[in-house]
Length: 264
Length: 264
Image (cartoon, rainbow over all chains, first blue to last red; front, side, top):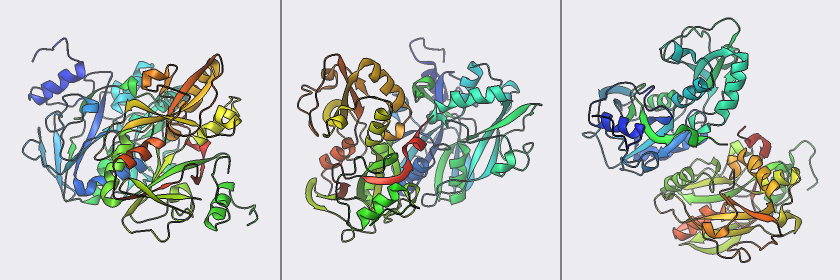
């Protein structure tokens, strides 16, 4: 499908995904547009999950919540359909991942509620735009993620430790990064910690629980942000009968400009 | 009950309210501590109301949501009990206010879900601390509130126009007020409009829909903030079978310092 000049780049990405022409991780696609984590749960768990997000806005900043049974999220894209617009999904039963698939048309049900949760891809882009070296991007690998001893506020069956992502940077860049990301609570906001990893229960930065290890150079301080893997880990730990998420790195590309999410 | 030196001023206010010694509006009590609007709804409406708040964070910034049937909100005060800690409540049936009462012990049910929503009392205090004349405070009257033509994002049965509060101020103060309130999304955040009231569907500033009219002096610009009356109006319009709110001005005094709510 050739690019359609009248359409936003984010919309073009979704059309290519929807038609099956684009099945790849979405990092770097449609720069400037917010991407989102996706979680889809049955009605009977939707209130508790919404409450979990409300109580834990740093790991679970909600960009949009659909009506029950409605696959659309018009506030994030006029034509957006969560059943077809992500490149790859994961289907979970009783807390186990049972299937990956490229659309949800055969799985959709009238009782499903879709949640779009902000993603750190958005602020990585902002940090780079400010001249900060984002190590996992300059290395072309995945960000390092760790389970911590920071508890989340439980809601019904959803609970568990906060998962954080880590970016090593020089102190001056760390200070600038606090300023930049504070403006964007909708994509995790300010860091939750910096410096001594042991203080938040991380024993070895060289062995992340998710993603890839990155080099920490002399004079660099590790900076930790609440991570969108937190709600996924809470969903898995709850061993709920049925849910759907995006596959790692295969996000929902929205028509919302990241800059429009700035709190100030 | 004499003041107990070891207790926070906010906690002392709640103890006096709980014991029936304080039955008055809460404006000016426990300065520096956030006060909250209260809405209590049955379980079957709680998800839609939570969604309404999520979709309309400026009029409905959530400070806390209780578990079903639980009258406590420990994140807002260790001993806080929504059944006894507000000076005056209103009980609504089928959209009509049927009763005012000073506690909810006789009305409490295991299916009730309590919502605490940020209140502009908190930022009025901040504006005054910055030397801005907040007219309704210097006049000792209630803030002026108006229905607008700004739609809220509906959720289930909850919908309707945004209600705003208005404060007239000099242009330089209006600019400073934008800066100050932008830091506090948890208490309505930045203004939603300033200047021409007709643009948001207000025909006559001298006749507010709620509260009192205040003088607008030559050279002053009216500045409009999303108002916590918005969710109350949505609840009333939905004509739901049963719910409870605070009585106007009789708020929940929390142990959360307003400054701790700053987004940056």
